[in-house]
Each structure stands twice: as C-alpha cells, then as structure tokens.
Length: 275
Image 1 (cartoon, helix red, strand yellow):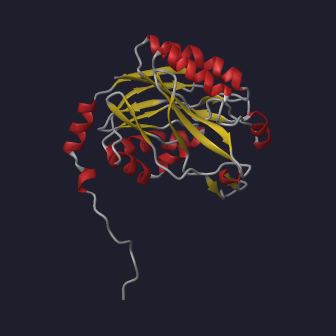
Image 2: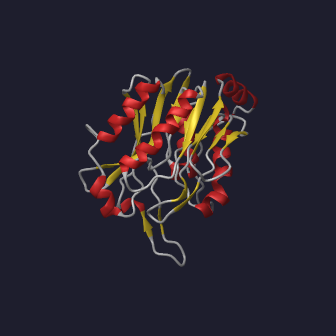
Image 3: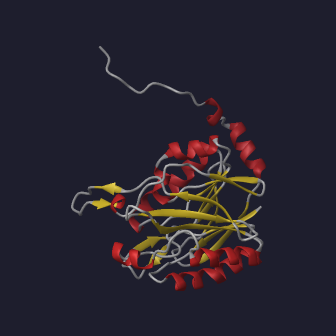
C-alpha cells in the first residue's frame, strides 16, 4: 500500500487551511496514495484560547469535517485529519484526530491522551490541560491490509501507548505533529525511530512546518519509518509538501520475528524499598 504524509503550515483561518490542503490531497491521490495523514492542528492553529473559541465548531455536523469527507470520497482514499479542536461541555477542547474512509464516512476518532503541562526554567508555566482535556482511550482502525494505531504529537514521548497499540494489532502508527524547532532538532527523529523499533511497526509522522500566523515556528521534516527503524522517506525541510512511501505488512512480520520484543515482554513489580 502507498501512504502519504501531508506537510502543512496551518494558520488561523479554517477555510484557508482547507483550501491549502485540497491540492496536497489531490497530489497524493494522483501519485497513488491509498491513505493520507495530515498534521496536528490541520484545520486551525490558534493564536490563543479566545481565538480558538471563536472558530471551533461542534463535532456533530462540523462543516470543515464534512468538506474533508467529501475530499476522501472524491479521491476514493483514506484521509486522516491529524487533529482539530472540538469544544467540550466543561469549556475545554478535545484535540481530536479523525479518519475518513474512501466512501467519505468517518471510520474512527481519537482524542490526544497526553497533554504538555510543564514549569520550564526561565519561562512561564505552560498548561495544555487548561485548554484541552486529555483522551482516555487508545484507538486502532483497519486501513486495507493494515491496522492503524492513533497518536498525536506529544504522545510520542510515552512508549506505553505505542506498546498498547501494537499489542492491540496496530502495525502502522500515525503521529500527526506540530513540533517546535528546538525540540524537533533534538528529539524528532530519535523518538519516532524508537517507537517504530520497539513496536516493529511502520510509523508515519505528518508535521506542521514553517512560520505560522500565530507567531509559532514548527520543525517540519515529515517522515515515514519502516519496522526496523529505517527512515524510508523524509521531507528534509519545513515547507508544505507531500511525502509518499510504499509499505508492506510482510516487513512487520519480518521485523517482529527478528526481534520478538512484543512477545517477550513481561509484567513486573515496580521498584520498592529494600531492607
């Protein structure tokens, strides 16, 4: 199966972001992709919470998701929107990933589980949980001969999620992201390769890249990694573009046979006090 990672530079206007996405999806389809992944915050990359509140729409009947469903149907292709904000009853938002099938219907949704809450020396405290509510359920879905595992950006720092996805049948794992430039330069490739190696799965990571209207700068460098941890395709820049690679379930079987880490894993007690 041929898969595509769509790299974008999303801004503050959902209609403009979808207009930018359309030709990229068309290119992926023309070049033979059966599945295309877009980055985190594809539909809106907000400047602040108030700006987010002014444009976020309820999930049911969401106008921009309806448009994406039409595009999936038009191209007869799985289209995976990396994420968009969905308002919740408590005033926060879900950072939600949505998979559409080739018939344009929604196949699966995933809410980002891990949220970045940190006190960083020399900087103000950052509380993603003040704006977003973390999800509670790992998600997989069939995509032709593969089982797709869902994750979003910061999730990639938590191996336990990827282990659960692989043990739940996933052999292709999606990582839509909006990595900053400093963390991208330091951690992007090593984290993604580690997630592929430890699960014996393909990893596809679609990134935001460039300087955004909200003042952020993101790293780009969308990649596709094979189950042995080899980068088989990469956009070596931060500009919008389409990245494609052919993937084969047999490579997953081979990698997991050579290093059966999933099968060899054991439960164990945490460290405790010793007298």
